[in-house]
Length: 221
Image (cartoon, rainbow, N blue to C red):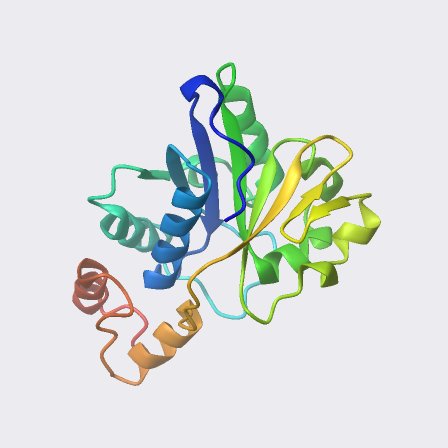
């Protein structure tokens, strides 16, 4: 597993895991757990995007419902927390603003990691102020078997130096780590489709999330 080294004097390591989570599912949770273990993270903060900056291919359900589902999904895991930073902020949910906020809150010796999926990482050059992102913290890219990190355009355009197959160093000193996690082909899109068809989503989402979806009749036509 890729690590950036042991925690400095027991200092906290914090991971930011953003998304629309529409809905959150077991793939999100398993990936977050494996990232936590691989990088000795003290905390994984789930960041709910209220207004994504990029157009999504479907109407998002209410932010309040997505918030409740994430809250239910991470209950019982003391290392998982939920932040409303992008809900409280007016306008679109830009990662540069969220990362900058958490960077300002770091204590001496603490480390910040931004957790991102491979697909999103390959499109990061479309993000607001993307060149600055890599000057603020390390990135952890959740990979998949068919993902070749060398195909991400940002590596060529931003001056990264490849140190190992799974670690790329930015000129700022921060790094991008590629982490293979247990493959999970389920997606939020698939869960919405299954729900619309009136089929069970048991074992695809936590039981508490399934019950909430059924109670609120979410994703049903």
